[in-house]
Image (cartoon, rainbow, N blue to C red; front, side):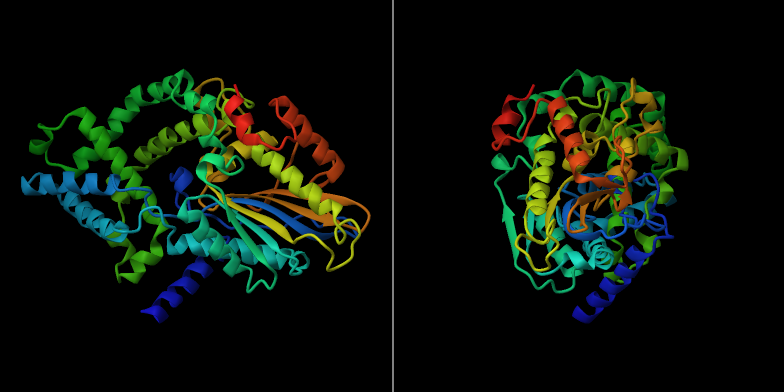
Length: 450
């Protein structure tokens, strides 16, 4: 079994590395990570990479808790007991049963694919910036959620036996202002339950397409006689839960192969039409856009909360620039090779917005048009990441900024290799715009934030 699992690991790693294969559509934040296609801009003459400042979302995962899987199977079992399933309904029931078996005991963990995503990102980093990893040490920071530690472990495996000291740290959730800032701001927690999010989602949920999708999914699954006893609210809950399972199935191809099942036997795609999936993706993305994205204000509370993470990036870049071996250019100097942080979508998206990354920071006057500029699968897929690659020529420092390994065009000159003085000044302006500065205790700042 161990040998078979390692074969699966190599197969998945090869699949993740292929840039020509697009991930499945309509999955939003559950989209498997896609390796970037194409090349990158060459560094200015004389500059070499010397430090990596990184924050990434955990890899592809199982469901975070029991609910959608058990609830969906319960409804399908009940219908089967009353001869209320269509032939497609029986087929989907068998698929849901298999997914429930995979999920049992695995909630919140990353999948084999999630580990492969992380290893592949690290392998590409090592291949592109080999001079960074001199063995001076790495700071690895995770949240209290196990899936971030699992992701960090897989990432370090991808660095191929890093020979420096690896310092792993984790703060309690109540003190983690850098990676779980969204839990520590009373003003933000109030915003999530407030009118902006509620009105936006109410308009989406009341849209005729929401009820139409729920009805269409039920009509495919259940006989007309069984449907007479079902309410519209039950149909909506069922279709939403089934969509959650549809989305997560693409995160576990390794687990499916490991059990000897074909992909078709665990595929819920036939439960939905293309139009159904487009709308389900839109609905789910709308909530992410309002809660984690620019929403109707690109510097609203849902973006301002990311200031502690930006402060940490500036501080750790300052430290890297200050030590010998970066500006001084002496190999083996003091300092470290990089900082690697592993967190969640709720941190990556606001940070991308606060940085002013164009595809992540365009607000929408109304929720109906948010998809024109903001796509969850482009900004916060599984294993999403933001990287600052620090370059030095021995006298000067420049920084390349990447979103999901793609070069970023920030609204300042000098890109994609931004002079650190200009990038730092820009970051300080962004922090000033959200009433933050380079203060030490960001926990108190978050509690006071309005």
